[in-house]
Image (cartoon, rainbow, N blue to C red; front, side, top):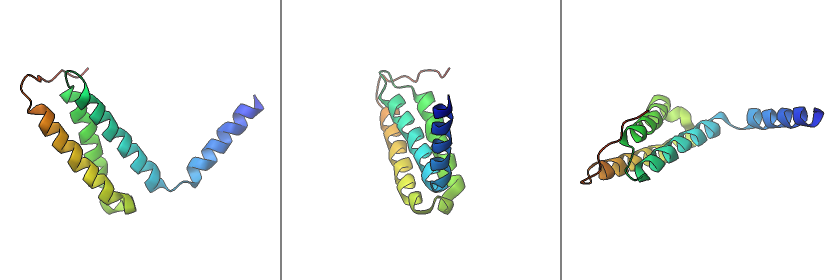
Length: 100
């Protein structure tokens, strides 16, 4: 049991030592990947993709330059996933699935 506690303590220390901007950027990319997965479904789940894309936008637009050196990359990623959404949503025969 002690080794589990030690491992958890070590993991917490690693997280505490990591720059917060890196962790937030990592989460934003995870949301971007979630959107991409839902856009690639057959049929695409546009409602789920929209929620994930809007979540990335809230982080990027809301935090802006506070994201440090990640801001430009995340803005580019957001623009790219938005373009992918428009492309997928505009395909004939791809009716949006409802969320939930």
